[in-house]
Image 1 (tube, rainbow, N blue to C red):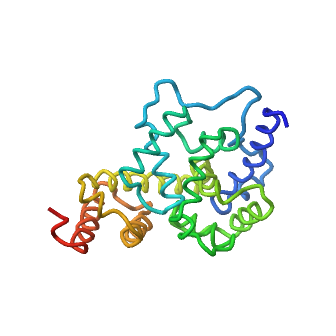
Image 2: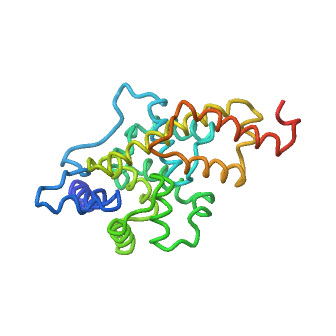
Image 3: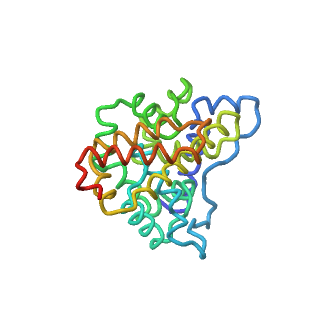
Length: 260
């Protein structure tokens, strides 16, 4: 199939998915107005990072991927490796850009799939049917249950192949960030706060012992619980003691000799 035709078909199918990203997102377009085209490529468009982009410009989208697929902040080495890989591939610096190029850019697709196919992500979502899977992604990304209309829509999209589990978390993230409804604006703010807290957490893992201690399901689960507590009322600046306490508790649990 011609690449341009495939790109347009991809855009057309996923644009509807993104309208439903925030649970009841499909309902707000029932007034007859045309939905905003959130996704899709022009015939000649190739989405790439701006020439002035640096590896640091990818930190936000990598934290978003960690939240969507692992439910926790990035570890320093993972953040470094994924930002470098995206930078070197000339990938887009935003979640929307990654989703747009997912099918056509093998490097982008491989990097996103590396999250979904990882043992951690498989364990986090293992055994979940489509309804449970979508709701769990909503909790990790938005900190809330998906509304019934959205749950049905996203689940059907997975069932009929319009969406895969590999790019579902990314699509839900993009949909929430692109939705200008009242709920969409709340969700976008929650994502922003989650990313800020995650970035602060990753920055606090700044010694060899911290890096060694931020490994394994126990600390990952604790970090996941911390991230699920972030909501629209969260004061990001006041969250630092929570982060420090979490790492201190982990340090103590593995032995004080590793905390020096």
